[in-house]
Structure formats: C-alpha cells, structure tokens
Length: 192
Image 1 (cartoon, one colour):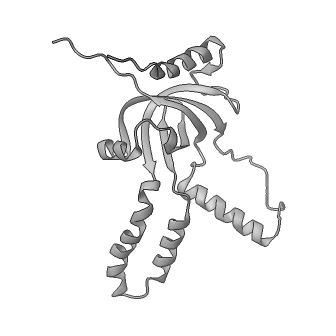
Image 2 (cartoon, helix red, strand yellow; image 1 turned 180 degrees about the horizontal axis):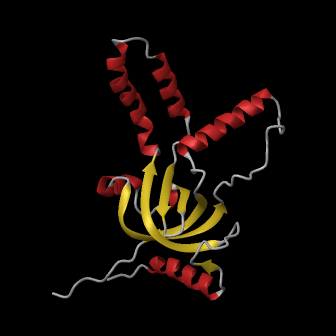
Image 3 (cartoon, one colour; image 1 turned 180 degrees about the vertical axis):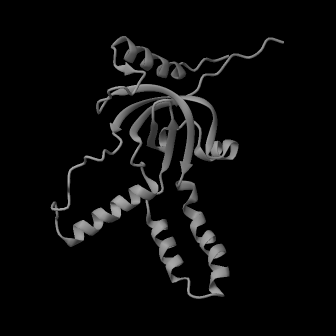
C-alpha cells in the first residue's frame, strides 16, 4: 500500500490562497491578475488532435466539388487552417460569465485524447476552475486604432491575427483566464 502525497498539493495551494484572501469566488469587480475559483460546465476543444485530419477532410469535401468546378479556394482555406496554431482550448460556462483559456498538454493529468474519447467535447459534470483573470470581455468603448498604423504589412498581419482570434480564439464577450487547476469533486464509494 502506498500513498501519493502529490495529490494533496492542489488542496494545499487552495487553502493557502484562501488563508491569504487571494482567492475570489466571484467575477464581481475583477482586476487583471485576480485569482478566482468558479464552478461551471466544461468543454475541451482539441485543435491539436485535428492537425492530421484537415487533409482527409479536404479530400472528402473536395471530391463532390471537383465535378462542379475548381476547388482552389477550398485548398487555400485548408492550407491556412493547417498553418494555424493547433492548441487545446477549455471553455467554462459559469453562472457569471463564459471563460476562455488554452491548455498546455504537458500539465494535464489526463490526455485530451482520453477526455474526447470518453466525453466528446463537453465534459460531463460540474467542474471547478482555479484561474488567473488575464483578459476582460471587449467593450464597445474601445479606443479608435484606425490612425495607429505601422505600415501596410504590419496592418495586414494584425488584421490576420484578429481574424484568427475571431475564428479560433477567445470570443469578444468572454473573459480570458489562465487555468491553474481544473478539477471536480469525487464522492466516496458506496458501502456494500
């Protein structure tokens, strides 16, 4: 019989944050850098696992289109999609807001492939996320950047970067967070 004490570390971190009044349980009046613990529903979007599927998907879609005309636009779109960052995203729906984050596979205790094969994209149950708030939802009173030009090439790259964010990144109305822990409570086993 062995006991792995490393699983106690997350509990100690939460207790330490609470003891120092550094852990908030609400997004009311958040500041950048606020550490929050929020319950919610979780979904995982694993673009990394899709990297090798874009070619076969393109062939599957392009074969019916070849009969009607050129598929060069589809080929161009698929080439661009292959070049985009293939990261793992976590979306959390809380009572207060939607949270967007990316996940580093090196720090997951369960591989995303296992999560996807078990749950699909929406992971069942209510989850807890301890995270650092690092991006606010966009506001309509954002500054006018139209005169903040750095040349046509830079402007084109910035436009492309905004487009990537719009298609694959944090939605404009969502908070951006950096997760420190994502977990759910496990109840004890039933007595026989």
